[in-house]
Every structure is written in structure tokens, then in C-alpha cells.
Image 1 (tube, helix red, strand yellow):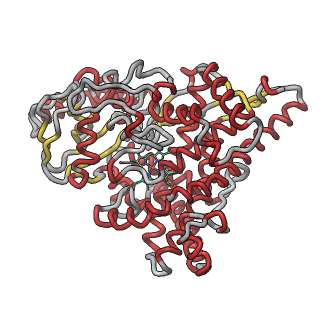
Image 2 (image 1 turned 45 degrees about the horizontal axis):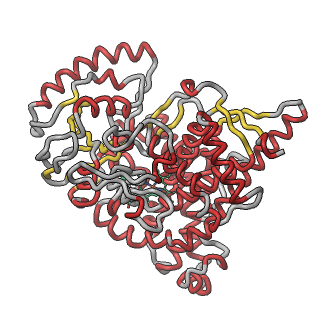
Image 3 (image 1 turned 60 degrees about the horizontal axis):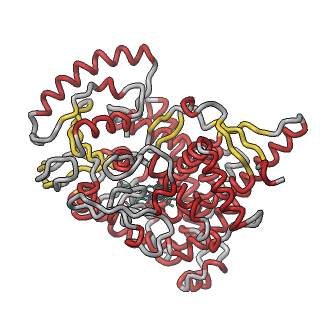
Length: 533
Ligand code: HEM
């Protein structure tokens, strides 16, 4: 995805240059091999000053659900259609790879699941997916609650401090707090490492944030200068990136070595019986080492862990950030959520069982993901030529695309499509309870009964009009982990506190990298719930 920020003088200069370049390119590309597709004529300067996905949305409304965008030195096909998304993600899954995304992420994640080539992906997915067994997730409830408790305790202490000065509220950047919380959870859940970032700073934590920052920079910078020989030694930010990577890699290598050296047959037996409750270390790393023997390739394991660290950290933090942002603007919905928590838990502790009763909180999490999907775009490149199906609001008989076509599948557009959602920009968690019949050929509507037993709405229920975790075989492997984690953290926050935005909602500026986040933090006023006294 592309970050669209610059200073105003930069903006002016680049506007002139880029307008000319983009007009030339648009003309050139519209005569290209994807001939009959509508072309977004917008100047590249449209991309400055606001996140890319806003412009992609306007062009979707103007040009339909499959259009071509000439951008910089490249053209992308932008898809905002569930029927075409289903084709790319599920029906013709092996006709596509991750394209640009793999180029950006490979230096960080190596052969981890996200950027991996298809052969490696097939092999590793088979090994990793069983690690997210329902009983593992149940065991993780403890990690989710204990880490959230740390954050709650921190807020309570800060509030006590303020009380001494007569104040009833504290001002906090909740985005930063959620980021720390999600980092602690992913560390413990995936490799049993306690970053302790809610309460302290450390070189490893700094290195994780440095690496995320660089991944974002690379995904938004047009020229991959870091591939130039010696760049990693000469360019200061690249030197820093290499040293951050080394800090994390050394930490992960140490954990892998330790996991291999402490492998015990009794633990293996417990794992085989999925007896997570009686394991001291229920982490995914323990599972990967114990169940596959000590001969697992260390480098591959490290790539797997790094991938999950990056994939599961900012994404979850973003869900919590936008859930609070939305709730703070809808106090009656916040009260409704708190009433549900009071009736299910009172002031008691959340458990795996009670999670099932917290329906409204679960729908808030889903609705936050609908309005702010993470990442807002999925990226693919066709490996061979393909015929995209005729979608809705597109060309009826579809489009042919050549091998090597780069595709932006806009989840943001899909999730806010006026053709599939009523009042698409409104925050209405209740919407997921209402089935929707389809009069659209090829799309079977929204039907919660299509996925019996699922605790959260998913892509099956919405027939690919809702893709919070992607869909098809490359769907997020940590989806249930992330959903449970978010539900628990949000419940524990609302159980104790009321939250208000410090400034107006318009003061919270959006920025996109791999996720949608704020420019300057989500500054909130946090106070003890007034209705609990
Ligand atoms: C893939 C979203 C949390 C691990 C994906 C994809 C999405 C996604 C949309 C598909 C990408 C594509 O098709 O190009 C999210 C969101 C999360 C979240 C919104 C939080 C709310 C997690 C967590 C983990 C994780 C907690 C690990 C513990 C992965 C991995 C993949 C993936 C390994 C690649 C799967 C594959 O290619 O087989 N995620 N994710 N994610 N996610 Fe997540």
C-alpha cells in the first residue's frame, strides 16, 4: 500500500512533475493490453495529502468495480467486487502470487507464509495452520487476559496519580497503548517471549518498531533503492534497518535454540493430546518444534516467527484503535456494549466461555474491521493470463488480463460498497445480524446461517463481500487468535473505563502503510466508568 504524505512545498513540486508524468502514462497505458477496462484518469497528485484508498474509492464509484489505474511507472488493476475477489482468492488461487508485496516483505520475512513462493507456502501452511487449534486458542485466553490486565492496571495507576491532583481523567494515546499490548500478546502467544512493552522499553522492542517503520517506508517508496548493492551499508536508514533486523533475528534465534534444547517427550505427549492447559509453554513455537522433531530448519522457523510477529501486531492494534475511535463517537453504542459486559461478567473475569456470550462486543470488532480493514488492500500479481469473471458494476463478460498484471484488491471499497451494504459508512454493529437476499447474479447474499458455529461474521457468510482476513487458502492463519484477542482487550477496557476523544474525530488524521493508522496517535480521555459507583 502507499503512504501519501508530504510537506506542502514538496507537494506543489511533485504535483507538477507527477501530473505530467501521469498524463503521459495514462495515455500510454490505456492503449495497453487490458484494453477494454475503464481507466482512472486521476492525476497522481490526487494521491498526495490523503490516503490512497480514499482515491481508489472515488474512482470505484466513478468507473465501476474493475478499473485500471496508471500510477507512477506502473499500472494496477483495482478490484472492488466480491465475485472477482472470490475468483482471485479462491477459485484461481494458484494463478496469482503476492507480487509487489512479496518484493517488499521478502527481506524481512524471508520465506515466511506471507511472501513465500507457492511451494514453500504449501509446505509451511500445512505445518503451521494446525498450531492454531481451537484448544490452543482457548489456552491463549489466559495470555490475552493477563496482558490486557497489565494495561488496565497501568491506566488505573495513572488515574490514581491524577486523583492526587484532583483530576478524574487521564489523557492517553490509546493507539500506542494498544500497539504495546498487541506486541506483548504476540510475543507470548507465538514464541513465549515477554516483551513487557506495556510497562517498559527495550532494545528488542525498539528494533521491532524500527523494522515495522522500514517495512512501511518500503511499501510507500516508489524506487526500491535498498536493492542497490552496498545501499544497506551506505544509506543510514538502511544501516539502522539491518541492525534492527539483527537484534530481532538474534532474539528469535535464541528462542528457537532454547526451544530445541528444552524439548521434552512429556510435553510432546501433552501436545499430541492437545492438553494445552497443563503445558507450561503453550506457544506456537513449542508446537512447531515439538510436533515436528528437532530437525526443523532454523532459518525457516525464524522466518515463520518473524512473519507472525509482523502480521499479528499492528493489525490487531489497529482494530482496537478504530473500535475505540468509533465507539467514542457513538456513546449510546458504548453504553450498549458496557451493558452487555455488565450482564455477562459484572466485574468478574472474562473466560473462553463468556466470550461466546459477548455477542455485541464481537460484532463491534467485526464492524470496526469492516470500516477500517487491515490491510485496506490485498496485493496480487497474475502468474499467467487469466479471464476475470464479469462482476457487479463491471463489464458483464469480464476482462482478460495478461500474465504479470498487478492487482489491488480493495477490501476498503468492498467493505464500503453501496451495492452490498446499507448506509455503508455508518458504524452499525447490528447489521451483521440481518440476512440480505441477493438480486445480483453470481453473488449469493449475506446469510449468517451459511457459517454455523462461527462466532464472528466472515467471508463465507458474506460471499466475499466481507474480507477482514482475506479468503480462500491464503486467508489469515491467525484470524481467530486476533478476533479473540481484540474482543477480550476491548471488553476489559470497557468494563472499567469510559473513553472520549480528546479532540474532534476530524483531528484524527489517517495514514496508511501496511495498516490504516493515525498520523499523530489516538489521543483520548480515559476515566473510571461513572455508572459503576
Ligand atoms: C494473512 C489480516 C492477525 C498471521 C492475512 C491476510 C489478511 C490478514 C487480510 C491475507 C493477506 C493476503 O491474502 O494477501 C489480519 C488482521 C489481523 C491479523 C486484520 C488482526 C486483526 C494475525 C495474527 C497472526 C497473523 C494475530 C499470527 C498470529 C498471518 C499470516 C498470514 C496472514 C501468517 C499469511 C497466511 C498465508 O499466506 O497462508 N492476515 N491478520 N495474522 N496473517 Fe493475518
